[in-house]
Image 1 (cartoon, one colour):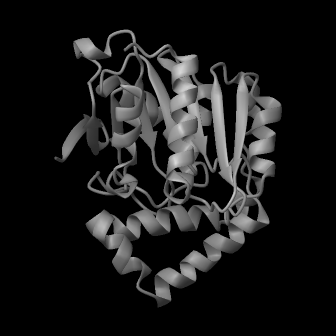
Image 2: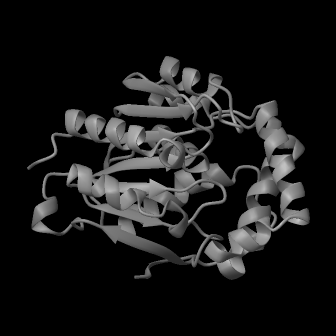
Image 3: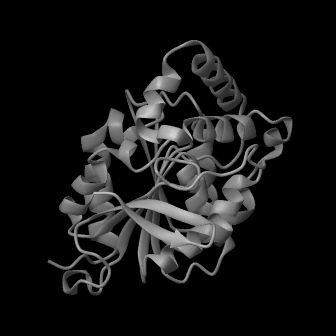
Length: 265
């Protein structure tokens, strides 16, 4: 069932799983907040958020950022610093609007970058932990190559049609907003390393050995700089660990949450 959060800039599509923050069953526990990839949205997570909510007993909120899914559109082109805007300005507003007091952020790709910026660049008062899939902390040649290939596929294959099933009228906004920013010449200098030492919560970073959008240097940099962090590299896994190795990600994320955040029975 589609629901919306109303922010000053417009409405955001959201989905909930498990207890909401004001439910008695949620008291004392954080809410899982899912932050999607550069081409993602609520529907593209499929049933993974519900499975993690069931496994941990936590409530979960999934939302589509502006310009994605059924959320309000944005003007193009997106600025090179659009991920910073999401982490520093928009995510705090989302958490306030959803009345989430304590959160564990589960971010994928661009969403993982948003989570890191929020954790290291704001007061992050309601934050308890981070789970990061295929995170980006700087731009690499492999990223530019794969994103350039995606532009060719969007123009010349049925990729646009496939993405339109999830994004509807936002499909061009979602694709070119992401693709155009990453392929801008200035994006080669894009870097989040300044935020990492300021991340003050337990962090689990997960990456596939076959990630076509980033090398292991991404997760190594996080492990070296984030004070309380652990890393998991998965074999036979590309840029979407929760799809390519769902059981491994569910197991690792559930164990991390139960160990670090004292989930109540």
